[in-house]
Structure formats: structure tokens, C-alpha cells
Image 1 (cartoon, helix red, strand yellow):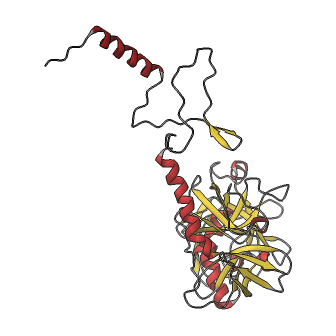
Image 2: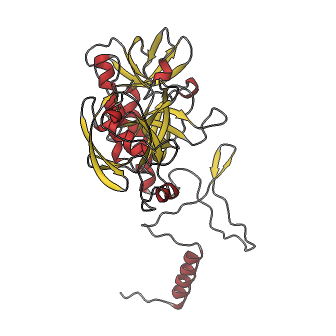
Image 3: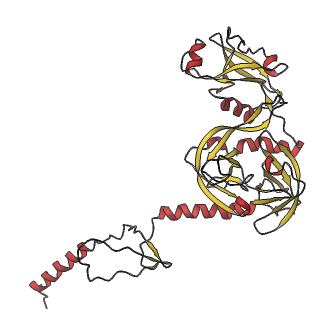
Amino acid sequence: MFNTFRPVNIIVLIIFTLLLAACGGIRGDEVALLPVTQNNGAASIPQPTNSQPSSNVAAAPANPQSLAPLSGNYFEHEEAFIAVFEQANSSVVHIGLDLGEGSGFVYDDSGHIVTNNHVIADANAIVVTFADGTQMDARIVGAAPDSDLAVIKVDARPGQLRPLPLADSNTLRVGQIVVAIGSPFGLENTLTTGVVSGLDRLFPGAQAPDGGQYNIPNIIQTDAAINPGNSGGPLLDLRGAVVGVNTAIESPVRGSSGVGFAVPANVVAVVVPQLITNGSVSTPWLGISGSELNDAMAESLGLDQETRGIAIGEVIAGGPAAAAGLRAADISGTSAGDVIVGINDQDIRAFDDLLGYIVEQTTVGQTVDLHILRNGQLETVPLTLQARP
């Protein structure tokens, strides 16, 4: 038997096709992202507000089974945050003090915990609380005020603690996603997210013996919410490795304003082992002060306007720079001082370049080659680093 297509079937097919088109058919490989509004706790899909009469097609019920799924990228992003928290949270601690509180993280399985110097500086008693509620008394092992880092220690059983790995903070890029875990305002096990907002910031550390102030190099700036109580906690990448130690915020209201700062992991890697071994840090030192060159300064020194480096303004008596014969600008301005433009194979354009290299790449007693401009001529001066007072 043969089936025949009657005219009425064709008309019905045409009407059906037009209705499907009018409803905006969605292919199986497309994702519909629809805004939702909150109505007494139930999500509903807003209906069109044009003047055309509504169709007789009933709206689908608003339940998870009938809503189109979000793009896979959303879930990958979400799962990454969840994975970092679940991986790292047990290694992040709340630090309770007789005055104040802060955060920290497990550095090794011997019970050493890294935090900020300013968190424990005036502490008489320290109690560490882990994510599972376990509390342990801690003692101070060592502190480095000039990098705002400190190490405390708890007596833990072998295998009881899970250390967090350190990342190479020199590989960070602006825009990279980061996660902070800590105890802002005493709210333990809090995760906040953001990005690396800036790199290579100089941040004030301890006061120098001459009344000046040392600077911490290569500071990381982030917009991940950092608040009082986050100090000493880890700033992590999406692999769960520590890229920095949250240390301060820039805020007129003592709350997060999207400008937070963290001591980079590469400084941690240099400072913390010394604190564990010696209880203190021996930091290499040049013994100079000076200014970063700008266009006007370069021109006044008879240099190419685009020349960058550190113009030496003072050579401290008895320091390594004085021993190496480096020259400062004459106070009368009649003679220019040396301009540091490189150290070993590292170009120097700003103080952070110089200080960062010295802190992260050198040791006390090491001899480095300083590349300087003296009277406009490039020279190399060997200099043996001494311990900073």
C-alpha cells in the first residue's frame, strides 16, 4: 500500500514549521543562557514584555532538569576553586594570640608553620587551630622583620601534617588567577579569589639602624579579598602551590579595597630555611642609597634620555660598596655618582630589580659583578657582599 501526502498534511507541516521557528528552536549543540530572577526563594525565567500576544505553548517548569546546562568552562572554573580549597585547607591554620590573631600554613612535616612577623611579634602565647578543629600550642622559631616573615612550630606526630609546596613566584603573570585562604576577621577556613593585579612592588619592611626603612622586593599585588586576619596565610595558584604570603592591604577603612599584597614565594624560599636553622636571617647588602633614573636625570648626567638604572646618592662608610670603590654624587652637584645598570647577568632598571636579585639570588660573602656607568662609560666593578646590619 502506498501512502499519499494530502494537501492538508502539507498545510499542517508548514504551520508546525512556522511555530517552531517562532519559538526560536535551539540546536542540541547550543547552550541557552537565560537570566533568572529570585521570587520568594524560587528561580523563574522572565517572560517577554513585547505587545505581541503570548503563544499557547506552556512554559517549561523552572527546575534543574529542564534548564539548559551552563557552559563546561564555568564548571571547570568552579571545580578548580573547589579542588584548591579541598587540597590546601587542611594545611592552613588559624593563629590565636593573647592579643590579636592571624593565619599561617604548614611548611614541612616537622611542624614548622610560616606566618608574618607582624602577626607574632608581640605574642606571649600562640595557639594554632587546624581545619579539623585540632588545637596545638606553638613556639616562635625565628622572625625576619625586614621581610615580614616568621616561623612558628608545633609538636606534631610524623605524617600528621601536610606541607604546602612553594611555587616559583618569578613565573607569575599579571592576570593569573590566585586564591587566598585564611581567617579574615576570625572567620576560619575562608577562601577568596582574584587575580595577580601587579608584580615587583616595593613594600616597606623593618626600620633600618640609621632611621630609614628597608624594603621587601618583588611584592605581589592582588585583588583577592585580603582582610585583617588573613595575614600570614597563603596566596595560592590553581595548582595549590603557595605563590606568596598575604601580608598587608592598602585601604582607608581597614577592610578589603581590592589592593592586597603578598611576600613572594621565592623570598620565602630564601628566608624560611635560615629561620629554621639559625632563628634569624643574614641578608646580603650593598651599602648604598640612591635614586632611580628618569628621563630628566639621565639627560642631566649627559646620558641617553632612555637610560635607566640606580644613580648612587650615598655610599655608606664601612659597607661593601665603599670597599669596592663605588662613588656617590657630590653633595654640591658638581660631580655625578656611579649609575648601577646591571648585576652579573641581570639588567637593573629599578630598585626592585636590584634588591630582588640580591635577596633571591645571592648570599653573604659572594662576589658579584656590578655594571656601572661612570662618567658616561660602562665599567664592571667586583663587589663582595656583606651581611646587612
